[in-house]
Length: 420
Image 1 (tube, one colour):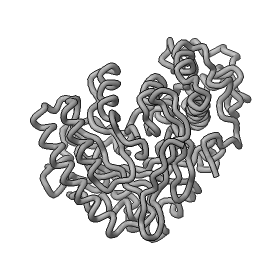
Image 2: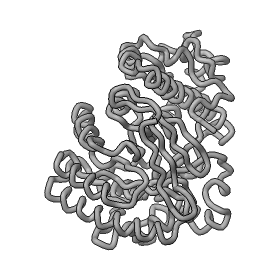
Image 3: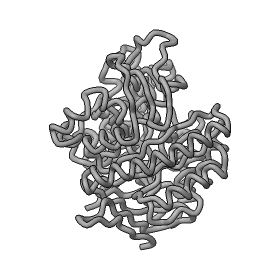
C-alpha cells in the first residue's frame, strides 16, 4: 500500500483511494466511493443522458462496469435537475446500481462557442447554421441559449455544483473554462485565473450544500503551456479537493498530448486519484496509464459502435474495423477470435456487416456490447500487468498487435474491476 488518504469529514470520508501496485509511473489501485469500489486504472463509459445508448443497465453491469459518467449540461436542460432530485438522484431515477461521476457542464457550454460539440451529443440536428448559442463568459459564469427550447441560461460555478448535488453523483467536477487549442496564451491565462476563482466558489458551495459523501475533483487547465499547467496544479493542491481531472486542450497531435498530460500529472501527490477527460483511443490509454493516470472517460467506443465500427486488436487499423465496408461481407470470423463476449460467441462479421448496411438498430446494440467488452478487457489486462510488474511488455505487445488483451474480452457476468 503506497497511498491511503481518505478525505475526512465529520460524517465520514467522501472517497478513499489506495495505490496498491506500481510499475514505473503506472499504478493500480482501488477507488472507494459511496456506491461502488472500483479497481483502477479504469475506463468509464458515458451515460450522458442517464443512459448508455442502445444498452440497458443490466448489460452494462454484466460487462463489469460500476462507474458511469453523466452529463450535467444535458441533464440540467432535460429532464431537469429538480425532477431527478425528486426521485432521489441519478441512480434512483435511472435504476443504475453502480456509481456516477458527473462533469461540470463547462466543456459542453464552452464548446457551443467553438463549434466542437457534435449534434449527436447535443441531441439536435435542426439548429440553423450560424445560430449563436454561447452568449458570453464573464466572472459570473457562462451565458448560453438552450438547444432544447431556446431559453437563455446562465451556468455559474454555484449552479453547476447545485445541479450535480441534485443529481447526487458520487463524484462532481468543478466548473471550469475549457479553452480550445486555437486560443492564444493571453486568453488561456485569463481563463485559467478565472477557473481558479471559480474553483474556490465551487468548493464553498459544494462543501456547504452537497451530500456529505459527494467527492469533488478539480481540473487542471492551462492549454499547451507548461507554466500555466503548473500554475493550475499549484492552486488545486492548496484547495480542498478529493481528486484531480485533466482537461482543456491537450495539443495538436498525440506527441503534444503526451507532453501536456505528463506536465499535468508531474509531482502530484499519490493520494489524489487522477482522471483524464475525454480520452479513449487504445494507444492514448496505454500512454496515459504509463504516466500515472487512474481513470478515463470517452464517447469513442460507444459512438463508433453506433456508426458501425468495432474495436479489434489490430493496430494497423487503429484498432477499428468498419463493418460497413465490403471486406466483411463474406467474413465468417467473429469480431475477435477467442473473445467470449456474447457478440463474438454468436455472430460473424458477415452478419454484423449485413445489420450495419441494412441500418438495423440491433447493429448499434451488438457493437456497443462488444466495444465495451473490449475496453474492459483492455483495462483488466492493464491492471493485471501493472500488478505483475510487466506493464511495459503488455503495452508493447498490444501496440504490436501481439497481445489479444489477455486472450479474451470480458465475459457476461464478470466484474473484473469491481471490488467489495
